[in-house]
Length: 85
Image: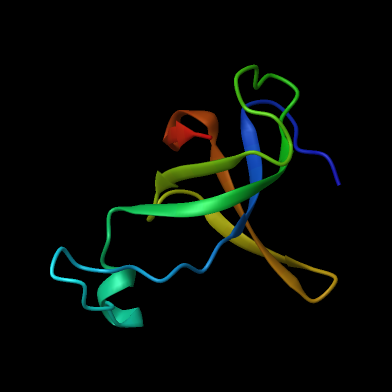
């Protein structure tokens, strides 16, 4: 599978989020966060700064989801990426 243009195919990373006081946030609270952590599966042909396998933070409500071979992937645009690690 290869993304084309400015599209990036990502797989969500489920992470435990702790508050400043050390309490774990519930799944409902985590879903309300503005940014989401994901692993890049395929970066598009016109994407230059992000490579396959990178971990990124992107707008949680951006893009859409697709199901392929019983796996769910997100499809976002390069402009929705905030941080690349």
